[in-house]
Image (cartoon, rainbow, N blue to C red; front, side, top):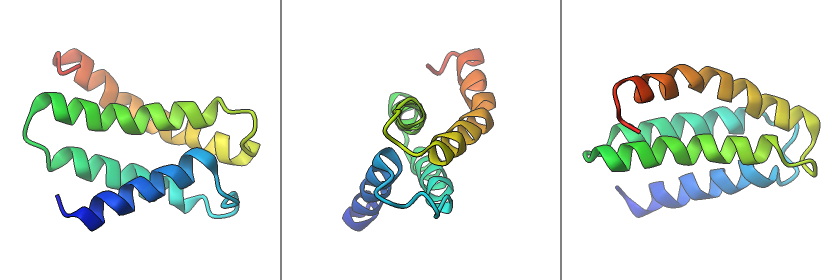
Length: 97
């Protein structure tokens, strides 16, 4: 994976986690989720795929539960978590976690 891709993903992840005055630009959360899923799709080992998915889910959960983050931002993280739940259940069903 190219270094600039990893840097971009990590930078967006930090923006999602700490909001960084981006509460009006909720599309960043969608970009983060999309990049995280794309990243997982490009991995070969099952353990790495699981880790990549859980990294996105954990970041969204941590952000959603952080009372210092604006409510609208936390609600948007919650909505993405709801969308990712079928993926998580599929991973559980097939024993990938």
